[in-house]
Length: 297
Image (cartoon, rainbow, N blue to C red; front, side, top):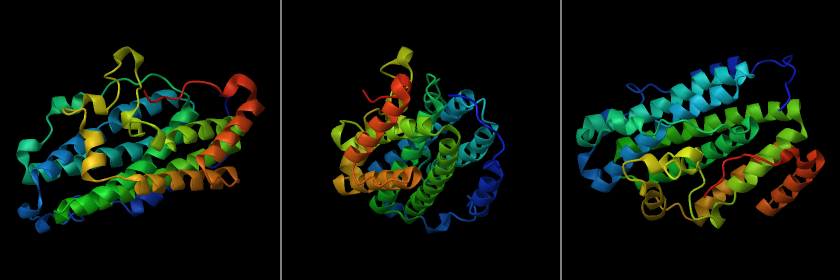
């Protein structure tokens, strides 16, 4: 990826103000006094632990972003916001367990297990991967809020889902800037990963950054989910607990296609239409658009 002009206004200062203005306070904005122990089941409590550990993976993801975006100080500065808010997600889930199920609070070793190095990957494709991940996580947490019966954790998941939506919006700003700077190179990268991430119905696993293989040397324990105390948790949570069914999966696909339509100034009604666009962009670049986005097993 060639360098780009830095004459455009930085996005980080504006994003900082926007996200700062809606940031929630863990003590004041979470209704801890509404906790009802009779409405928290054992299986629900265990899912909270798994999500707390999964959210801790913002740490290695941030290390990856900073490594692979050394030439982009604006985006790297934005990572200070994203990292803070994502680690706060892990913290509020652990605080919930600390208050109400201290026997399930993750140990430092359990948290540290999900911190490992990701193989380098093209920065534009990684950006798109995480944009799609925020959309998916927003929908997962909305379903989690509906599935849970205890009022405080319902409120927490609703709060986290709103954060994820805002993060997706911030990533979209950087994607727009990338198209201004890199043109069809960025369009090809975004379309390529968009086809992958909008095709979850055709895969045996959930397509989210925490469930993709990212370190060949550690395979098969090179996904975040594979390093959890219960590596099978995610699929069970989605299929048997929060019931993330085809209706909800379609909501994710629709949001990805809608945002890419706005981004590319071209309507994509289906993954097939996006794939045709991907081929057009790839052809415009020759063989240079081929390469290294993380792929599901």
